[in-house]
Length: 493
Ligand SMILES: [Zn+2]
Image 1: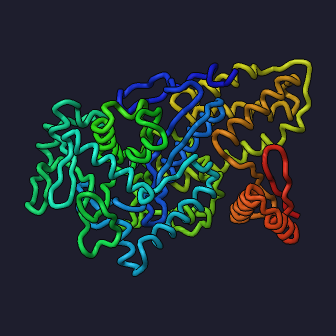
Image 2 (image 1 turned 90 degrees about the vertical axis):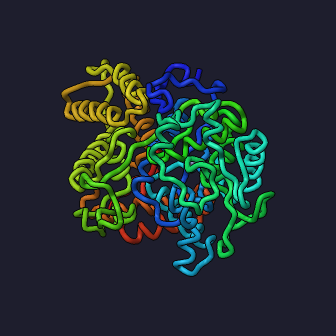
Image 3 (image 1 turned 180 degrees about the vertical axis):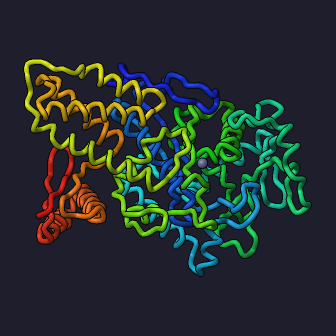
């Protein structure tokens, strides 16, 4: 029996505005698509938070025994500066400003994206497709939309006819907008546009002569519209209908609305059963923006080199901090919040690290089965990680009481306690076991944690020479790595 037969998840579905019991299309299998980054700058901390929510969800689905295909794309073409199909391609613009090839921009920031996510201990998605790798599929979808009479060509560009589509299917179903309001609220066309109506969106854009990111198509040498790539890649890898589609709240409209319209136009059915949206991250109560200085890069959290924080924080501490808020709540990133999370994080790790030394007794003074189900109930309730963490701290209290001889636990319960904590803390929340060193600074903890991660990566790639070198060099510097069942910890001389 798989765990998913016993534990039933409720997901808040943006489409219905309600929590619904999750039932995958194919028993035992889950298809999940999450809109990935546009790789033209360092990954934004707000995006890291969104991706972390879906990393946790991916981890939990796997924990329940589902076979999950998780697709998260890389947008490396087609995303213009402005959502209304105007402005320069973001990647092409960066390339122009830095006088490098667009693909150099893509490479640089894809590497940054992966490095940052690795530091936060993300699992890689099952497939990470790119927009430029799926131009043929996108052209095929455009052809099909034109065939259905829902797309039209003007001067080499192709647009989706929103008003025509809305005659049979409601446009705005996800973001709860209606076309009449959209017409009312959109600016009139400025005469430069080829669109029939301002609500229409680009499926294909003819490239201006100076635009280097271009591909041949039946309509012109050009490039696909941004919304199309997600329809092409989700359909290709997950099918015309799949279980979960996620992304940040800001993508609800127009991006996800357009995805629904394209897929409906092409296949005649709703593409996604559960639409999930993660809320935004703000800093010190205000919108995070480079232009106002209210801004921090993920790497600056680990180095401490940013005026908004007083010290460096280990990646797992930052991860713990983010998961202490529910994914649908706004998260306020503050130094005080991080300090409190850091304290809690080490209290949790200290308790975990004494479990093996606890002595079992005849009976337990704490109902472990009930506690375990409370942890599951919390995560089953639309992935409520703050409640999960509150339950974990109940266990911490209990562990400390056993240690002090004020409570007792049976052999079997001790095993359940240990297994459940390991599952929730490491497998599902994705934290890394760390102890606060007596002599070391937090900067040191962050650096060693990073090296432990690099060593794990080296081992996974069977690069044992590198993994041994990391261990030996650290030993020479007075830092011992201790490999245990639950991961690697370290001690200093
Ligand atoms: Zn997308």
